[in-house]
Length: 226
Length: 409
Image 1: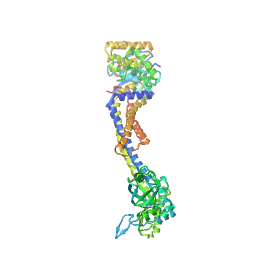
Image 2: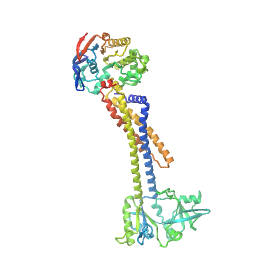
Image 3: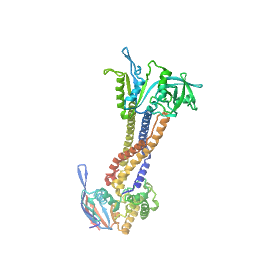
Image 4: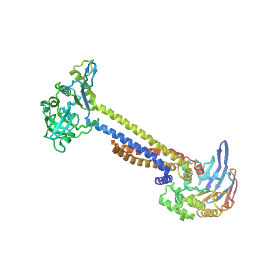
């Protein structure tokens, strides 16, 4: 079985009386170490797809296997465990804890894994070094630029050595130069650590960093090119 | 699973961010806990005072008063008829087996002179039993005896107040004082008894043999007549039995026909005092209950703030869930926040409550007693309030869908 395997994934939202099919029978497989870009216009279901892959949301029907484990049968806390151990998520809006230093933001996933304070600090510092922000470890998010905030978020996604990194428009709020810097970190990590990287974007120059592009439209995959 | 220490750190940080809000929430609990502690201290103090008065009067006490006269259809108060005599007291002692000690009393007011000092005080004529009946030990010297009663000797025992007023720091034993101009030898001094339930100074008194009081001090036109007979029952269980036996015996001795009223009254003083104690107990509970209401209001304040906090921090909750916080990690975080608010309020409230009670007893002169129980109760109660009112907001937060929480604006 592939590293990520989804079968006939369907997600239906109810908006009042209308059922919205955000995902419609999506089946796809991603191998370990792949770098996949997911593209598509707004409302095409690509974000919903990512949220389900990241165990932040559950599908209405269909199956999802991560490293061979059937995610569909897991409860709330088991899903939390998957998010903690196997998935690192990078958001468009960074989603850092306000009024909290960068180091503590990076420590957060380890906090929920019961790792000792000393080891947390060491590993968080290492992750910050990986994204080139070690000298800003004591800065709070509002003291950092957008690119720096996204790098803190990236360090947080990496710190538990999750095999799957998901990024939902990670450069959406950044300028071109900063976007390029962030993307270079992604590429480097993908090559160095053999982690699987799935990235949502609607910019083709960002998608160009990847080796495989999946296009969504109206909740379905319309193309899958390598 | 997150460690408790980290959870505390997160909670403290969150509370520090909203200093004013946290302080006001804590204030609600402080007021509640202070009220509970102070109210219980006042109530317990009042109960203790009454309990002390009961024990100072003597325990298991019955008082037999002579009956009321009826003069031309006008009924007079009890004690207006000289119906009780020394022989009644002796009969009670001999025949009522529920009774342990009997002391007849014949008393009056007299002017007492020693050297240049003089003092007006109550003089109680009784038998040596009086000191057992009233649980009143001697401080020094010896008591008068049955022989003294028989021969009406002029000996006396002084209460502490009389000693202070006539002798100051001198030893009164063996000295002669004049009571209503009649010389008496002081053979002993009684220990300090303090105030009675009615606020009377019980130490302002002199004891003499009952016969001496009747024949030599005050005189009476009814030989052997006594004003009161004090009776001590064998135990509190024997009180009703003793009361019944005395009633039957005296009716028989006084030849009272079946359809006529008693010419005497038996009063159970302990019972009266216990009733007073009971009502103070109810008052304490009532005060405590009222104070608890304010504690409850403080708790609702905590819940209110926690609910606001959960709503405000929905995104934070979403972020924590996204990186792997489990249901109980989130719940614990908010419960500990609520618990911190309530326990900090509880501790400050206990401090203010205790010092407030002390100030109250100094300023208002009330007896206040702080029991470990009331402190534990207030502390435990505030802790429970933290958990109870913190749980619902925490529960609500923990059930959020991670993605909905993240998207919350």
